[in-house]
Image 1 (cartoon, rainbow, N blue to C red):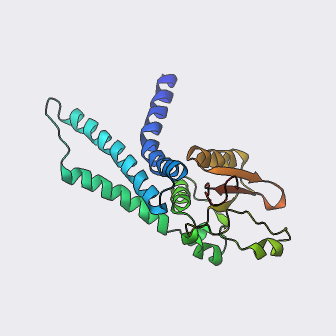
Image 2: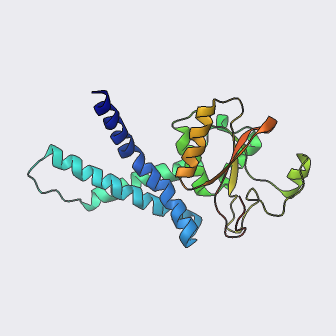
Image 3: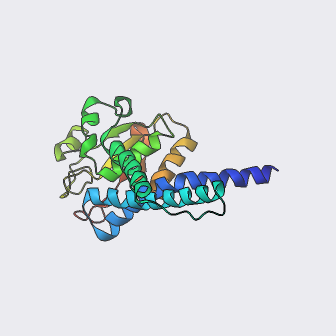
Length: 215
C-alpha cells in the first residue's frame, strides 16, 4: 500500500514538474547549443511546455469522453500557448521585493538573462525563502568587497546585454534545503558553485559564449 502511494506520488510529481522542466531546461538547451537570442530561448521553452500540456489535455479529454474522436482546435492550442507564455514572461519581469537582498539588487533583476529570471521565479513557488544576494557587478565591485578584480566574470554584462550569474543566500538555511536548491538549478541546466564561509551563498550561472569556461 505504501509502495503504491509512493509510486503514485512520484508519478504525479513528474507529471506536474515536466512542463516547468521543459519550459526552463528547454530554453537553456537552445541557449547552450544554438546560441539564439535570449527571448527566443524563452519562446522555445514555452513551445515545448505547451506541447506537453496539450498532450495532457488530450488524455484528459479521452478519459472524460471515451469513444469520441478528439481534435485540438486552433483556439485550444493558442490558449495553452498564451497561458504558458503569460507565465513565462510574467515570471521573467516580476520579482517580489522580499526576494532581493537590497533595493539595488531588486532593480538589477531585469538585467539578468531571462532564463535565470524565469528559473528563480519558478523555484520561489516552492521555496518562499529564496533570496538573491547579488546579480550584476562591475570590476570595481570586487575591489570594494576586498577581492582582486576579475577579467572574466559572468556577473558582468555580456554581449547579449544581460548578466549571466546570480548569487542566492544559503547561510543559515538547512543543509537539505540548500542541497535541493542546488540540485534544482543543475537539473534545469545551469552551472552552480557553492561558496562557504562567512559569506555562504549559491552561485548560479548560465554559460556565456563571450567568456567560455567562466562560471
